[in-house]
Image 1 (cartoon, rainbow, N blue to C red):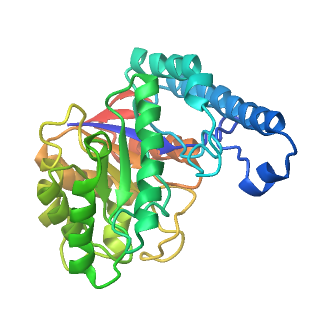
Image 2: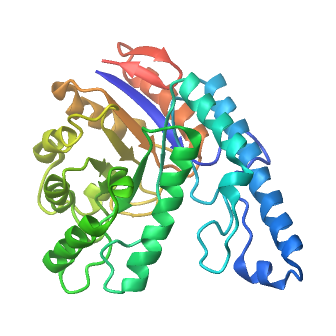
Length: 318
């Protein structure tokens, strides 16, 4: 069983480096000419792309193979009132990024923002969600990276959870295959449990991401041991191993806010629950200290389980 650790978006080990610089629509509107508007979008986007390359190279240098790209890479890319051909402008840059990812066999995914709700009762939200998801699909396409996936929550519970889940199923089936083939669903910490998410994933035939801390906050009466085998089996036939999310609570055990770092003892206990299943897994660490939390956790694991074999700084075997 091989475990790879990953982190989200910002590399704190790289000061003053961000791939998420933004241009608000309010600011964009204040610019007086079309040339000014385009130049601003191009300047900020290029800065983000350059910094994304820096982060990827940093990951390569530190043997980190799993990483989540920000959803804010290209400002106003999906705004209905802003139509600019960023895909053509940055086609070469996207290819360079994709070539880097593929050369070093990295796993890359995205997590579209929470305002993307496939099962919204508002048709405009459903359509804007589709538009936003196309951005992620096109990013993977422009990078030449066919293995990219997007993580989403089920979303709205309006009308009751059963009705909302059915609404998700119906809307999902109306979306194009280019989008639905990239989607994976995650349980949340307040509404849709891991079991409910798992059942929907089985119906749709798509993989599920177990968020361990969300499950602790909202378990629906099921233990991790009961549901984990079926969750991992939703990845059957996929080219990449199952992925999971792991975070530690900031304060009390059911505090939904993420802590700066990962509790090593809790993490080791979870891995030992996974061990009998003997499946490779990739674990996205959702900690405030990002890459620093990954390095800190690796150090904790080495102290707690001296017999676990480390392949490199982010990968170990049991």
